[in-house]
Amino acid sequence: MTIFLNIVLCFGVVLAQAIFSTVLSVKGIYPDLCFILACMIGFLSGEYKGLMIGLTVGLFQDLLTPGGIGLNMIIKALAGGLAGITTHTFSTVTSPAVLLVTFALSLGCGLASLIVAYPGLDGFALLDALSSRLLPQGLYNSLLTLVLFWLIKFIGQSVSMVHLGQGPR
Image 1 (cartoon, rainbow, N blue to C red):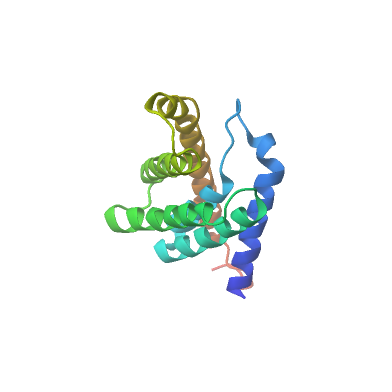
Image 2: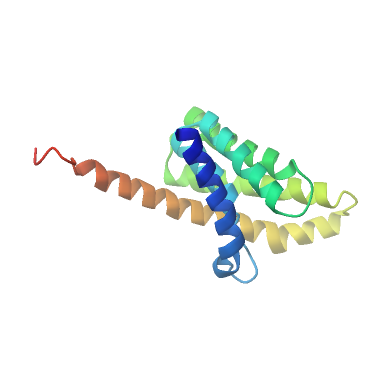
């Protein structure tokens, strides 16, 4: 049952990115909801779960968008796995750790995608793409991830105070 729910979640996020990406864009910078999902699962559930969700969401993204199969799957899997590893091995899952790790992973994923898509890119074009697109998108992805992290932590604390079906304690 858990596998089915993970597949539905991944497919839903890919569809949500396709439908709502124009609504969520800020000055032409689009968030990568699939990347954010992989990182959030890595932060909250560990590196193995982040890797598996990243593989699944990346595969769906590769299947439903034009381009080759494999790049998004590898990048999202690495992002989810590395998010889990860095926050559970080197530090605890705190807001600054979520912000910094997501920003670094977003820059790395963006650079990898850019280099694979345009292998003959010269240094000036790479620097221009980095300053005009990749840095703002990395910041936007990391801020969205941080907001979602806070919401999940807040909702988790609120739900843990309520004991369903057990009455007052």
